[in-house]
Length: 187
Image 1 (spheres, rainbow, N blue to C red):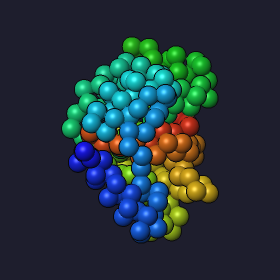
Image 2: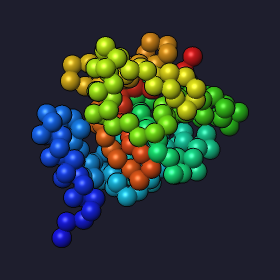
Image 3: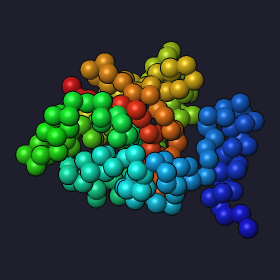
Image 4: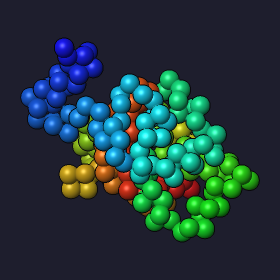
């Protein structure tokens, strides 16, 4: 028996293929960090299962953002992998994880969150409509810019740094996560 969720996903896939926008389609419960990301679970529940998001989860806990990201949302989260955090100077990550740096850590993390549910198809549509870029207001108050990088989506921060979306459209009960290969930094 097909569940309602799987039925809706099949309809979304069929509609995306019919419209020629296969990027709008997504796999049921995609794998991230060796774990299935269940659409019925929230952002924190899923991220806590992914082996490649342990640094992000630890930072979310340290910043006191667990309750927020377990909330109703919806949220769009650009989630840096452990490898993304490893690209930063070790001293930077260690400093941000100290209790007296909680405000700074919270600022960096909320810079990775956009209110609402913006999937990859919507990002691509807005990039095209914007003549090659799409600006998004973050929960932190800054701006992220989405652009196409070949057939992938790049997210550019206000300092000119950026990340590539490695795994788009990881749908959650309270939003969508796009796994990225870099840490985005606010001004």
